Image (tube, rainbow, N blue to C red):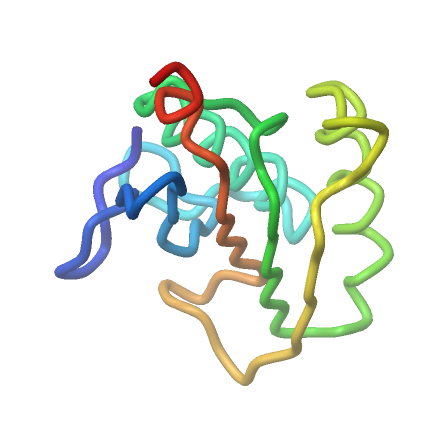
Length: 126
């Protein structure tokens, strides 16, 4: 799991839900090289690790918010996004709800940031 770049928790439980902080494409404390596609792949690696720390997977994700510094990168990010959720498997034949917004800048000069809300699989056991 990556170390946060600010004073926040990377993942929090609230009721039956898990909320992740926005994840950028950092590995070993630095933004990965290779542009928006490499960053998006690393973002998903970071999200999978965060979710795994709470015994969850991408299959548990209900809502996704994608932040892009260049909306023209939407198609590139969307391809990787679709692959990640296809590999994870969907819940009841559905993909998560999603919003995508363009922003002026992201931490460390990242091109993409993604946050998710997931069901807490441990809450289903009780």
